[in-house]
Image 1 (cartoon, rainbow, N blue to C red):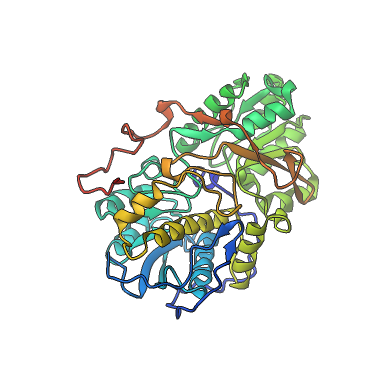
Image 2 (image 1 turned 45 degrees about the horizontal axis):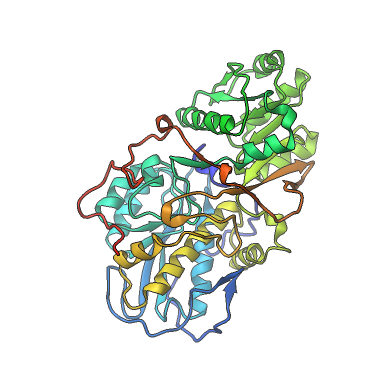
Length: 457
């Protein structure tokens, strides 16, 4: 899960467990033409599109699959916010008349962590596409998806072959060969005195080892000279974190990067840092914008030095960012859970719907690949910094959040709701960190076959 949650966090609300049933067909109705999602003109509405143009498409319906890992017994409700978001967006779209008059019929799949291949096999037989989903074990299903030409607009990807997979377009791309390094550049701008005082917490977990290798190259690109204190923590936990904290103290660190999420083991490590008398800045991904952090920090304030980099707007900015408010309102009214991964799923649904509208009556997987490959500036109506889904490139922007007691706030740039952008934030990563072989088109070659759908002129 270290790689999964590098995309976003669980920060949000969970008012109920309602609204989990597969979306039902809704009667197409006329809708105002000025409906928007944030700054994005709605791709939904009545129309006269017709024809059984592809699997899952009829005169009146478009069938899509979506879902999450909410049935995972070791973490019930895992990524539930993603399925909740797509379910709410399907209803929102159908209330306007669907896509060019075709009703969207959604099938909600629960991969429960270990069943990603099984649900993908099912989707292969009935769905037009997969949309806004997030399956943590997508490495087990990627071969199946590619073999049946199931075009995908996921909310997130995890495995290298899925992240750079053929026929895959994400609202918020997370490719293996390029990374958004804004948090390191922004940390250098906020604290230039610390560029020689940071280190990275290593782990025994293979995915974190790989992630940290990539992070080191990003930190160096941002001008950091890491101290390389040689501290590696057991992913399953340590009987005592004090010796490791003491080693960092002796090494003289004033800042630490973690690729883990805010879990009890990490909190115990932060306690150990306090016990040995140091209070370094803790820097991490958006995973640290999570409900668990203020709940724990409110008791002791030991994470008041936390900084987390994000390319999404904070949920706290809903009053000033229309797209965030609209997302929160739609999902909450449907009884779902709101969180950053839910906004990722929402962005990908809107990206899919926009391409589907443009295809009109020619709604085929080929047309969708053509249209999606031409989208080179996308922000989900204002949910996040602009990305390039067509080229599978992440944002060149970011913001930094921090926590004080139980409250999150934006730490950089100074104006809440604003991102800072810079071309240098987009960092090319070392091929040794990719985890897969890419072709000249930057697509993973592992499962390619002659029938893969590629963009055509």
